[in-house]
Length: 515
Ligand code: F6P
Image 1 (cartoon, rainbow, N blue to C red):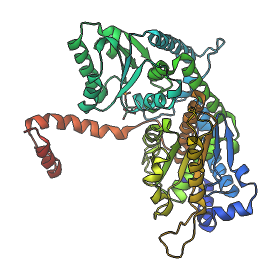
Image 2 (tube, rainbow, N blue to C red):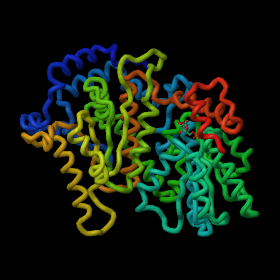
Image 3 (cartoon, helix red, strand yellow):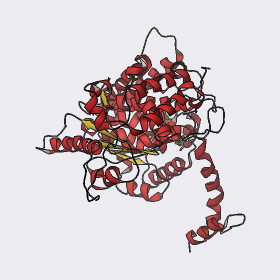
């Protein structure tokens, strides 16, 4: 196992604090641009399919240099190598973390069994996807899954809608709230429907409840064969079989749920954009993996972003970060990234279980621009808290409606400019303090490659901050307690038994019980 040093134990930690106290805290972006003609060039980064402009952030070359030293002292490079090498860096579950292998190209000369398994499964899944795409009797695909088994495919199918074949509708059912499944089932004909039961474990309560109800509906409304209209995407092939499903695409325990859209969990994406499209998504992610793995830290986009995150969270003590994709097809990206970042790095102990004396994951949130501008951007410009904002803009539109795209891009540029420049006003109400940080990402076009690269960039950025914080970014014990308590409460809703419950839960139980 690679030697890791927690960031607060590294010599550069105290140096960063001193630098923050003396200069970092008061950095003024307007002055920084005025005094450094190269600031945009030095603080922006070209990476595969994604250009990132970090120059409107509260950093400068000395800050970045100290952060780079911190990263080296913490053993970021060795930890990265350990991940790519398949070491069990998910130590609390004793698992490797190898989602990058899912996008590695096939290599006939490789002796790596895992890589061979990855490609055998990928080939089988993509063959199936193309068969179903060609089958015009299937008009509706319903993905039943939650968390990582829902957010990624749902986000990507929407994001790549330009590439989605006409003639099929995609539905995503995740919530145990029956309103969701009932609403989808209403519009379906069993003979034209394919259900995908997506669950790494095949035990998740929400997914199993929805899967059982979907199967019951299917059997009650047709005499068709479940095995032909249901497929499973899971590591638990036996449970899928017991459920009555013959067509199963598997994956492995070294693929975390929130890192699984590249695996069989991506089948809805492949059904939507075809096998070529899915391979392009993987290729984009792989290009970013190579960038992350090989580029020097100083020119490594995910590393620079992850270090900026540490600087903001632990020195500026910003508690949230917002993301504004200026492309309506990216509307589910904030929700996807919330799981990626907050389930990975929302931890209060280090990888050895020791309490941390500093903050970890920020709250990540956002809505597509320009919608956010007419909702909460007021607070970003004039509120009392500083929230770093991230813009994602796409140069080429995929529609030909006149005037729209330049208006959209002008808004993104103007918001970033306004946040930084501000505007003085003696009366106060119209005063914009400015100096509010933002990062600006540019894709040339919203292609499968660009989306793949962007998502991989985010994964590695989360890896970087998690590595410095000394945490295990690949477990999620925090979701367990609520699951256990829900099991205890469920029968009480029927029986009314409130014994042993706190007064608030007992009072609410009484109000929510059916009359
Ligand atoms: O919310 C916890 C979690 O384990 C996520 O990490 C995961 O993506 C989700 O539940 C779904 O799990 P599964 O794919 O096993 O149904």
